[in-house]
Image (cartoon, rainbow, N blue to C red; front, top):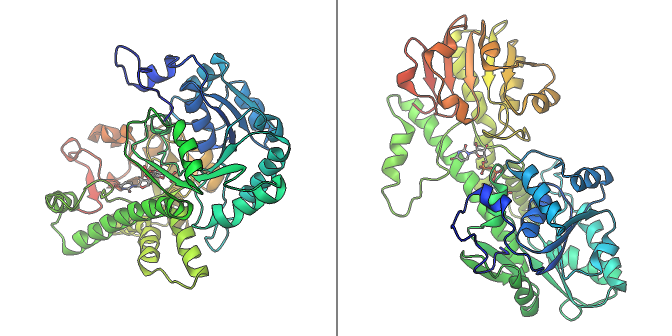
Length: 462
Ligand code: UGA
């Protein structure tokens, strides 16, 4: 990332606050345009600007651009509001809807546009194609060499077969000679995206040619992490492969939890502890629960399966990864039925509605299929999430949302803890006193068992 040696604060304070509140570099370094100011684009634009670069964030959504230029992020990400405002105050970050104007003085153009899923799981590249076309048109009249970098997650071959031709056609310039082209996947996690952008734990740079790679590496000079330079297609596949592997680990852990339950008397975390003694097995992402959600894992695995199918390959393992994930929320429904009998007319509280704790994002949240299945059984479902109530209500309007956990739990027959929000870890028996019957299902294996005396506790995976 753009942190030059010696640019760190002398006191060595490496926290997010230190990052946001320090000016790091005052000397302008690279000039960057970020096309697409959604989650990935805005976070990178802010991180680059705070790192000393001059950045223009561009988007076709004029309202988002107006908000962002006033220091109002268009989505929730911890620390982003402060960081955005700080970056704007440095004068190094600005926003525009005009790609051509933004391109004029810029050497680096990051394409961070959305790639929505189609019904069959494949991804729609029309925004990327359109962005490449517009960037190409801007480059037609702009002098100088610049590198276009694809950050959006795309199937192998997209940069070469879609982005490159669009750029060449509308710029009437030649890749490799007149401009550079790279694929530089992002590995941001929601909730720690700013930290991840500032201090990546690895860098993957796929390049059209050596010069593109060399020029792009300039802005990552200060990054102290492993880096790998490869061709465009490999970089694209590395991003998909990483997410597909992590998602498969999660589904494996869930499969193991279900097997532990089938045997009885087995605790999946204890089994994983034993597995992880093998130096070849890393226990991260082997936390069993109600499945994976979010804007990346489900979408990327489906996209890879669909892209393989288009090329004549049927992925069995990745389809199983998805299938386990689809069925996993239903495990909580089964447990609820086993504990409380028929669910018709029962009041069921779901704590944690977003796809993971500390987020307001309900995209692909496993609470959606969970709530839907409970509603289908005739249950009255009441959910609570300190950040995601509104978004969840919009996704599943039939549920009731409560203003706090106590109201959600009042007179409930069953409580299902759906996500790993830190607030659920501290729940004690006293928090469940208002329930009609104290049946609690720990869908993420996070509750403190010792603190729940008198509660009928069911833990997925033993
Ligand atoms: C994920 C990856 O972790 C990032 O590295 C990647 O950059 C990002 O996708 C992306 O492609 O942009 P994110 O979607 O923010 O990041 O979420 P994660 O923290 O990875 O969690 C994904 C889901 O898996 C959550 O629903 C979480 O609860 C679940 N999970 C995760 C488990 O059920 N068990 C685990 O052990 C780990």
